[in-house]
Length: 162
Image (cartoon, rainbow, N blue to C red; front, top):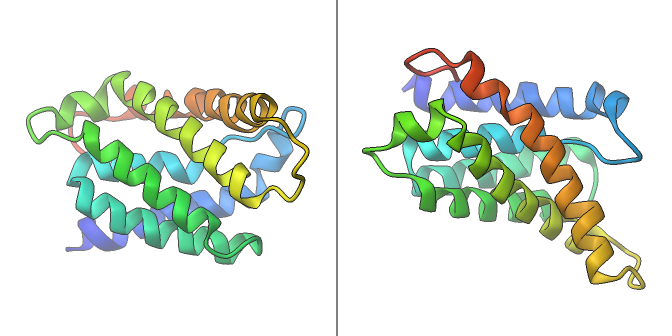
């Protein structure tokens, strides 16, 4: 029970703290990676779509409370991201999806969608074009998150890392 419920929450709490303290120091022109979404996707692939959807909801709630931003924006996008990554979940391919670079591809796809929806919900400026919104707030953070997601298959031993 500890490894399925408490441990993932502790990892997400750690990544949220890192997200708000250290990640702004490595931002490039205001573009930052989304580290907590990597853990949400990992645990969704590990335990299934339903578990991931609930986990994404609670992780997003914690993220919203910690950020002080629009309450419900991260909760909504993390839930959608976990639900979408659940489509890649297959109990016969858990090891393949979490231990290979397929994991990074899944993170890239879901991260782009996550960042785009989050910025579309929380952006107050209505004059921003769709292409700019997709490229600057969807694709670039997705690429940046992809770079950090390479760490999971590289350092994950044959078993569960997180």
